[in-house]
Length: 292
Image: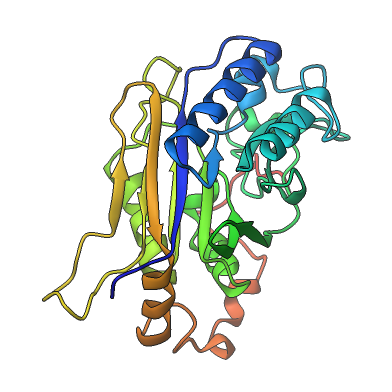
């Protein structure tokens, strides 16, 4: 396999500025740099509008989807001719939501996703969770690519990526805000492998509380016919420092691999999985702080 069609994602591993206005300006400047580097899409870390600041998890600091902050990235996407996946604390009743929105290179909103698996055991108990997982066709200069999104803690539930795969996702975007260590990186590697999808995760760099960089991309291609044995699916792993990191997903190779390999939806038996729909919880998994 040798791809002629690539989808290039810029991971904007940035430190926030401490204000919505500051984050907007810094984010727009980073998008311009990402375009100069050749990106098809720029991806922000989780809740960029407030820099994932626990003290601002309220509607007082939230923004509407048609706010100046969000619209500035739609306008930038159109001006730059590059897709932008911006993240923000979305004003919502009764509580705000943790949201990612993708604007295509024409400035159109094609996907808006709110985090389904909120961390109810911590500060995110102040947020409403999202309702579903979504995919959309993103128009690029090289053609269309089917994208989906999940956010941080969603990664820890295999159902998140599985549903996105079943809805046709070829690339999954993952805004993030937590320490990326061996087990969390292993989860992302596994989600890419078992669903035969590309996964792009953007985290905050070291210096942001409870974060350490290590934004990553995986292409999900575990085997190549011209190589013996299994291969490393990692494309890029950033260090801890602030920066813009570019990853090129080989779309032709991913698509060809999905036609031939045994993972994903090829040999599933969903009639055997009915227990997955049960809402019953038993010990040791009872948690009184679960926000249904």
